[in-house]
Image (cartoon, rainbow, N blue to C red; front, side):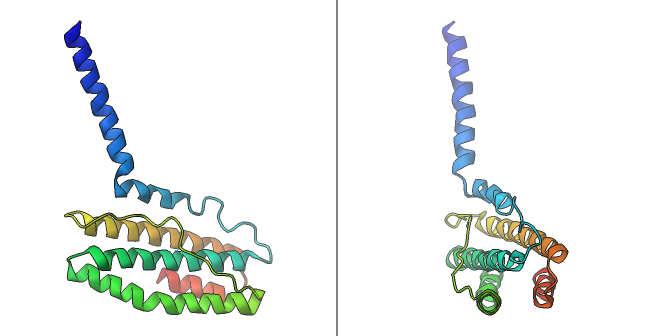
Length: 166
């Protein structure tokens, strides 16, 4: 009976260890990206473009936060170069979206990045975590652009959707 109990406890500890390890790893937090826009942009009403602008500003801010983590932690020049490019290009895109928000809706409220995955400290898989997070991030952006194309009639927004996908 003692041997059976010991084996059972080892199996239970092993399963619990796997579960706890899964939850505390940086990759686990990447699965939350799928839940960002479960509600989508809502109905095609007069505020759909405003919701898109807020979501896209948050989207660009998240890209910048991921890039900062990559720039600070990666050892690969390709990853650092990609992070530098993101950090150089995203502020102009964000500024343009804020300008439209102010001009069209007289809304000067700021949007923050949401659900930023913690990529963790540098190890042999850091760059892979960054690239996987960036891929998931861009897939989410494409979901938003596909949705706004069905709901918006504003040329600037539709052109922005094209730009985001390019």
